[in-house]
Length: 64
Image 1: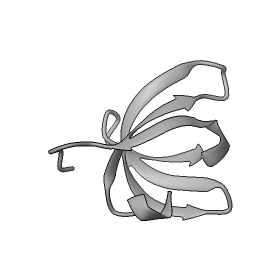
Image 2: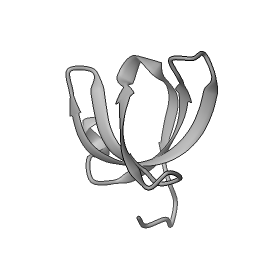
Image 3: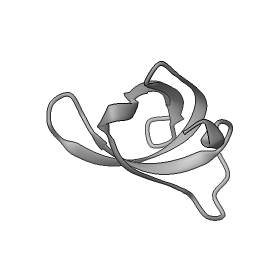
Image 4: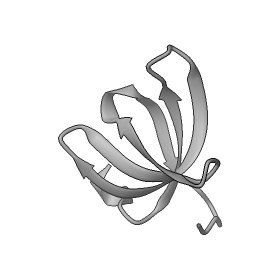
């Protein structure tokens, strides 16, 4: 995930409530299994556990 710092990616995420969501995030930092990012749907900072990211890919042609 380090390679995505400063980039926008799309993730499939397993939330703590057991729900699976799809999000576009701008990765700010990755440390100790935690990703700090801005969720573009909510336009707010969020924290994601690396172990709960089921899939990730860069977004094509999308700028934040």
